[in-house]
Image (tube, rainbow, N blue to C red):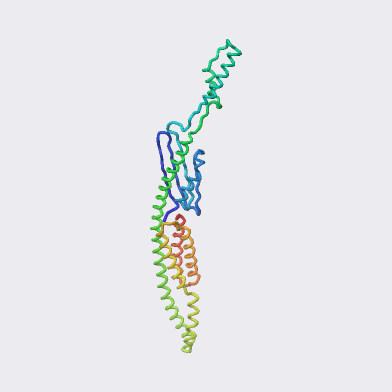
Length: 294
């Protein structure tokens, strides 16, 4: 079981650049990935998102990717010498034919041509771009592994807390079950004694049992108690699973709350009311915890 809250960071450094990948996540109903990265990584955005989705199932995930140049640039200069030679050759021939006495200085012409983007072009190395994208994905993968380990560690802590709450809830269910059995026996004896005081010995035994059964059935909570035990056993089973169980646990707690509310509405003894309040308090604590479970 994993939490939806976690943090992971990975750094890569060589003689050309430094890559920092930082990922943090908090609870959210669905998976929401927010990427903050340089525009040169835009071609790799889908691959980065897909990589995260393979591990992170739920939560708001914020990923920050920063790149710093530490050495030589990933750019290269291409000088179109063929065009320059062709241009200078034509200029020299034209000057010689038209202005024989003119002095032609190729050096000054070349200096001017180097400032012209038609003759000098700065481009990104394509091979380096592809290798760089692969490298970034590897760094992201390592950061995802770290945040996944962080979420797993916190999930184990939540698991221990929920297991403790589950044990407390089981004690209350057993306490309530024992009290109901004693309460029904005591209620029957008092009911018979009161009717005898009112009606004497002329009470129809069968009628008495029928009336009492109707009254007890209206307040019978054994079925709700049985379902609560089934639900709590299911919860303990889910807590041991590795795959995401947050949504299923949330639904289960809703069902348990319905059973507890039904018990409260059916029962009038103050002792039962007090136990119901304790049950609802524990369920609220469980509900708060499972909001962070993936």
